[in-house]
Length: 309
Image (cartoon, rainbow, N blue to C red; front, side, top):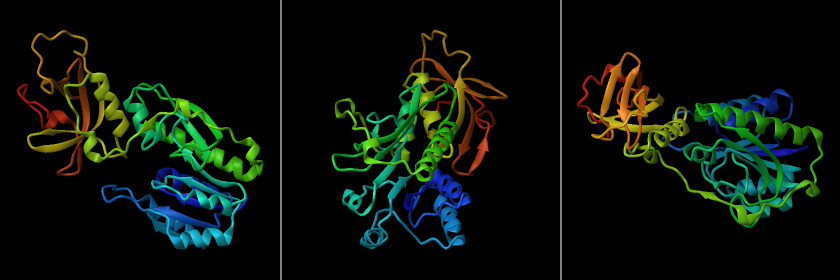
């Protein structure tokens, strides 16, 4: 099947590199340009792969009229969208044999919108999944479903672990669609709009920890945003620290009649334990954004008078 790829990110890189390794080349690609705060530039790696094979591409944050004209000229069997962040003009379906299909990290119609994997972890969900759906009129992520698979979220899995599993499922599903050539409009299932839920866009600042929250909620936030994502963070001595690893504190279930959220209550060679609105959390690894170094928090926090903000 002839296809056009629109997308990027870690998943887009894995999909394109796997497809190219199997001689399944896109007719054209529009690669997602990263935001300024994103340190890892997957777009550069995808571009290098496409250049090696002489595949036409452009790098953008939004489709242009030029891209529309190229799609109309190629008239592919399908367009596959993975790791793209802006709306796709649904009228482009008419220039594809089967239409435009997108991969979404949720069990649609749940979690329509932005950062569905992160929101699922933040909310303490035990399951997430991949949905491949046709991009159609009717609202964001609301099109008919072609493929869906449920995946478990382990209690101690971080976003990096969960995303790896989601990428594997997405890439395999894409290859099956392209190689088996069994796609038809009859295989699409309409979503139940009455069961839909939605998510809003997240910004790096949304990762600031509120130590008045329950320790489990803070732990979920840390897991959801940990590297390679923007990270949950706190302030200590006017320095910003992104927390990379944490675990339940040894005093998590002890009763405190005197509680100050954010106060350090234990320091040892493995990290620091911090009181939360309820429970406690042990931080074992964080990144000093001033130096860029990954550190054991106990190296810089030496007093039970210290309070993280």
